[in-house]
Length: 251
Image (cartoon, rainbow, N blue to C red; front, side, top):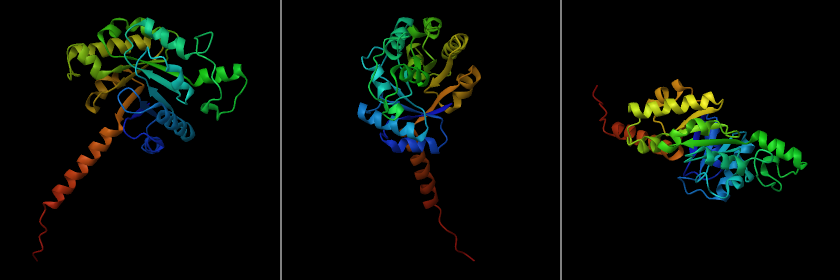
Protein backbone atom coordinates (compact mmCIF):
# COMPACT_ATOMS: atom_id res chain seq x y z
CA UNK A 1 0.00 0.00 0.00
CA UNK A 2 1.39 3.34 -1.09
CA UNK A 3 0.90 6.33 1.17
CA UNK A 4 1.32 10.09 0.91
CA UNK A 5 2.16 12.30 3.88
CA UNK A 6 0.35 15.57 4.54
CA UNK A 7 2.75 18.15 5.96
CA UNK A 8 1.85 21.60 4.61
CA UNK A 9 -1.57 21.06 3.01
CA UNK A 10 -3.65 20.95 6.16
CA UNK A 11 -7.20 20.63 4.90
CA UNK A 12 -9.56 18.24 3.10
CA UNK A 13 -7.99 19.15 -0.24
CA UNK A 14 -4.98 16.91 0.42
CA UNK A 15 -7.36 14.01 0.98
CA UNK A 16 -8.83 14.42 -2.49
CA UNK A 17 -5.41 14.91 -4.06
CA UNK A 18 -4.14 11.75 -2.38
CA UNK A 19 -7.07 9.70 -3.60
CA UNK A 20 -7.10 11.19 -7.11
CA UNK A 21 -3.36 10.55 -7.50
CA UNK A 22 -3.89 6.86 -6.80
CA UNK A 23 -2.40 6.54 -3.32
CA UNK A 24 -3.89 3.99 -0.94
CA UNK A 25 -3.62 5.86 2.36
CA UNK A 26 -2.83 9.22 3.89
CA UNK A 27 -0.40 9.97 6.70
CA UNK A 28 -1.31 13.05 8.72
CA UNK A 29 2.05 14.10 10.11
CA UNK A 30 1.84 15.82 13.48
CA UNK A 31 5.45 14.97 14.35
CA UNK A 32 7.29 17.03 11.75
CA UNK A 33 4.53 19.31 10.43
CA UNK A 34 2.59 22.20 12.04
CA UNK A 35 -0.70 20.30 12.06
CA UNK A 36 -2.79 20.80 15.18
CA UNK A 37 -5.48 18.54 16.62
CA UNK A 38 -8.41 20.38 15.01
CA UNK A 39 -6.77 20.30 11.58
CA UNK A 40 -5.92 16.63 11.98
CA UNK A 41 -9.53 15.89 12.89
CA UNK A 42 -10.90 17.68 9.81
CA UNK A 43 -8.47 15.81 7.58
CA UNK A 44 -9.27 12.45 9.17
CA UNK A 45 -13.03 12.98 8.85
CA UNK A 46 -12.63 14.07 5.21
CA UNK A 47 -10.59 10.94 4.56
CA UNK A 48 -13.29 8.79 6.11
CA UNK A 49 -15.93 10.36 3.86
CA UNK A 50 -13.65 9.86 0.84
CA UNK A 51 -13.06 6.21 1.67
CA UNK A 52 -9.33 6.79 2.16
CA UNK A 53 -7.61 5.31 5.23
CA UNK A 54 -5.92 8.04 7.27
CA UNK A 55 -3.29 7.39 9.92
CA UNK A 56 -1.83 10.04 12.20
CA UNK A 57 1.88 10.14 12.98
CA UNK A 58 2.13 11.13 16.62
CA UNK A 59 4.86 12.98 18.50
CA UNK A 60 6.18 9.78 20.06
CA UNK A 61 5.26 6.71 22.10
CA UNK A 62 4.93 8.35 25.49
CA UNK A 63 2.66 11.31 24.79
CA UNK A 64 -0.54 11.35 26.87
CA UNK A 65 -3.06 11.79 24.05
CA UNK A 66 -2.50 8.78 21.78
CA UNK A 67 -6.08 7.56 22.11
CA UNK A 68 -7.35 11.07 21.46
CA UNK A 69 -5.89 10.83 17.95
CA UNK A 70 -8.13 7.82 17.41
CA UNK A 71 -11.12 9.58 18.95
CA UNK A 72 -10.90 12.39 16.38
CA UNK A 73 -11.24 10.02 13.43
CA UNK A 74 -7.90 8.43 12.55
CA UNK A 75 -8.01 4.80 11.46
CA UNK A 76 -4.70 4.22 13.12
CA UNK A 77 -1.51 5.67 14.51
CA UNK A 78 2.06 5.64 13.27
CA UNK A 79 4.08 6.03 16.46
CA UNK A 80 7.70 7.16 15.98
CA UNK A 81 10.76 6.41 18.10
CA UNK A 82 9.66 3.08 19.52
CA UNK A 83 12.86 1.86 21.16
CA UNK A 84 11.64 -1.04 23.30
CA UNK A 85 8.99 -3.67 23.72
CA UNK A 86 7.92 -1.89 26.91
CA UNK A 87 7.10 1.23 24.90
CA UNK A 88 5.20 -0.87 22.35
CA UNK A 89 3.15 -2.42 25.14
CA UNK A 90 2.33 1.03 26.52
CA UNK A 91 1.09 2.10 23.08
CA UNK A 92 -1.22 -0.91 22.96
CA UNK A 93 -2.40 -0.26 26.51
CA UNK A 94 -3.30 3.34 25.65
CA UNK A 95 -4.99 2.60 22.32
CA UNK A 96 -6.80 -0.72 22.73
CA UNK A 97 -10.00 -1.22 24.66
CA UNK A 98 -10.20 -3.76 27.50
CA UNK A 99 -9.28 -6.57 27.77
CA UNK A 100 -6.41 -5.80 25.37
CA UNK A 101 -5.67 -2.33 26.74
CA UNK A 102 -7.01 0.49 28.89
CA UNK A 103 -8.36 2.95 26.33
CA UNK A 104 -11.13 5.05 27.80
CA UNK A 105 -14.59 4.57 26.32
CA UNK A 106 -15.29 7.76 24.33
CA UNK A 107 -18.51 9.52 23.47
CA UNK A 108 -19.90 9.69 19.93
CA UNK A 109 -17.14 9.19 17.37
CA UNK A 110 -16.81 10.62 13.85
CA UNK A 111 -15.86 7.10 12.79
CA UNK A 112 -19.51 6.11 13.27
CA UNK A 113 -21.09 9.33 12.03
CA UNK A 114 -21.41 10.43 15.68
CA UNK A 115 -24.03 7.75 16.16
CA UNK A 116 -23.56 5.92 19.44
CA UNK A 117 -24.00 2.17 19.09
CA UNK A 118 -24.11 0.00 22.21
CA UNK A 119 -20.76 0.18 23.98
CA UNK A 120 -19.73 -3.45 23.30
CA UNK A 121 -20.52 -2.99 19.60
CA UNK A 122 -18.69 0.34 19.47
CA UNK A 123 -15.61 -1.16 21.10
CA UNK A 124 -15.59 -4.12 18.75
CA UNK A 125 -16.02 -2.00 15.62
CA UNK A 126 -13.44 0.53 16.75
CA UNK A 127 -10.92 -2.21 17.48
CA UNK A 128 -11.46 -3.74 14.06
CA UNK A 129 -10.66 -0.47 12.27
CA UNK A 130 -7.69 0.58 14.41
CA UNK A 131 -4.15 -0.05 13.17
CA UNK A 132 -1.14 0.54 15.39
CA UNK A 133 2.18 0.99 13.63
CA UNK A 134 5.46 1.15 15.56
CA UNK A 135 8.31 3.07 13.93
CA UNK A 136 11.77 1.67 14.62
CA UNK A 137 14.45 4.24 13.87
CA UNK A 138 17.28 3.78 16.36
CA UNK A 139 19.98 1.35 17.40
CA UNK A 140 18.01 0.73 20.61
CA UNK A 141 14.91 -0.19 18.63
CA UNK A 142 16.94 -2.36 16.28
CA UNK A 143 18.39 -4.29 19.21
CA UNK A 144 14.87 -5.04 20.49
CA UNK A 145 13.11 -5.47 17.16
CA UNK A 146 12.17 -9.11 17.72
CA UNK A 147 10.49 -8.25 21.02
CA UNK A 148 8.84 -5.10 19.64
CA UNK A 149 7.38 -6.94 16.66
CA UNK A 150 6.03 -9.69 18.89
CA UNK A 151 3.94 -7.37 21.08
CA UNK A 152 0.24 -8.29 20.68
CA UNK A 153 -1.81 -5.37 19.40
CA UNK A 154 0.98 -3.90 17.27
CA UNK A 155 -0.08 -4.45 13.66
CA UNK A 156 2.93 -3.22 11.72
CA UNK A 157 6.50 -2.02 12.05
CA UNK A 158 7.86 0.73 9.81
CA UNK A 159 11.45 1.90 9.54
CA UNK A 160 12.23 5.58 9.80
CA UNK A 161 15.02 5.41 7.25
CA UNK A 162 16.94 8.61 7.87
CA UNK A 163 16.81 8.51 11.65
CA UNK A 164 17.91 4.88 11.68
CA UNK A 165 20.84 5.55 9.33
CA UNK A 166 21.88 8.52 11.45
CA UNK A 167 21.74 6.53 14.69
CA UNK A 168 23.84 3.83 13.04
CA UNK A 169 26.50 6.47 12.38
CA UNK A 170 25.72 6.62 8.66
CA UNK A 171 23.77 9.88 8.22
CA UNK A 172 22.41 10.17 4.71
CA UNK A 173 24.12 6.94 3.63
CA UNK A 174 21.04 4.77 3.23
CA UNK A 175 22.83 2.58 0.70
CA UNK A 176 25.56 1.61 3.21
CA UNK A 177 25.73 -2.15 3.94
CA UNK A 178 25.24 -1.54 7.68
CA UNK A 179 21.98 0.27 6.99
CA UNK A 180 20.76 -2.40 4.58
CA UNK A 181 21.60 -5.09 7.13
CA UNK A 182 19.50 -3.26 9.72
CA UNK A 183 16.61 -3.02 7.28
CA UNK A 184 16.89 -6.73 6.59
CA UNK A 185 16.84 -7.64 10.28
CA UNK A 186 13.81 -5.47 10.96
CA UNK A 187 11.95 -6.84 7.94
CA UNK A 188 12.60 -10.45 8.91
CA UNK A 189 11.68 -9.96 12.56
CA UNK A 190 8.47 -8.16 11.65
CA UNK A 191 7.37 -10.79 9.17
CA UNK A 192 8.34 -13.65 11.48
CA UNK A 193 5.97 -12.15 14.05
CA UNK A 194 3.18 -12.12 11.46
CA UNK A 195 3.11 -8.33 11.27
CA UNK A 196 3.21 -5.94 8.30
CA UNK A 197 6.61 -4.48 7.39
CA UNK A 198 6.86 -0.94 6.03
CA UNK A 199 9.25 1.88 5.22
CA UNK A 200 9.25 5.66 5.51
CA UNK A 201 11.77 8.11 4.08
CA UNK A 202 13.35 6.05 1.33
CA UNK A 203 14.28 7.75 -1.95
CA UNK A 204 12.65 6.18 -4.98
CA UNK A 205 15.99 4.70 -6.12
CA UNK A 206 16.19 2.57 -2.96
CA UNK A 207 12.58 1.46 -2.67
CA UNK A 208 13.29 -1.80 -4.47
CA UNK A 209 16.43 -2.81 -2.55
CA UNK A 210 15.44 -1.54 0.90
CA UNK A 211 11.69 -1.97 0.70
CA UNK A 212 9.95 -4.08 -1.90
CA UNK A 213 12.60 -6.82 -2.07
CA UNK A 214 12.42 -7.15 1.72
CA UNK A 215 8.66 -7.60 1.64
CA UNK A 216 7.50 -4.08 2.50
CA UNK A 217 3.74 -3.83 2.15
CA UNK A 218 3.29 -0.40 3.74
CA UNK A 219 5.27 2.29 1.93
CA UNK A 220 5.14 6.01 2.58
CA UNK A 221 6.16 7.18 -0.87
CA UNK A 222 6.42 10.96 -0.49
CA UNK A 223 5.08 14.03 1.24
CA UNK A 224 3.08 16.89 -0.17
CA UNK A 225 5.77 19.57 0.00
CA UNK A 226 8.36 17.41 -1.78
CA UNK A 227 5.91 16.66 -4.57
CA UNK A 228 5.01 20.34 -4.86
CA UNK A 229 8.65 21.39 -4.97
CA UNK A 230 9.61 18.64 -7.44
CA UNK A 231 6.72 19.51 -9.74
CA UNK A 232 7.36 23.24 -9.56
CA UNK A 233 11.09 22.81 -10.16
CA UNK A 234 10.50 20.53 -13.12
CA UNK A 235 7.97 22.90 -14.68
CA UNK A 236 10.11 26.00 -14.21
CA UNK A 237 13.08 24.22 -15.76
CA UNK A 238 11.09 23.12 -18.79
CA UNK A 239 9.63 26.57 -19.32
CA UNK A 240 13.00 28.29 -18.96
CA UNK A 241 14.53 25.96 -21.51
CA UNK A 242 11.61 26.65 -23.83
CA UNK A 243 12.09 30.41 -23.42
CA UNK A 244 15.73 30.18 -24.51
CA UNK A 245 14.84 28.57 -27.83
CA UNK A 246 14.86 31.17 -30.61
CA UNK A 247 12.29 30.32 -33.27
CA UNK A 248 13.71 29.91 -36.75
CA UNK A 249 11.38 31.70 -39.21
CA UNK A 250 13.62 31.33 -42.24
CA UNK A 251 11.93 29.92 -45.35
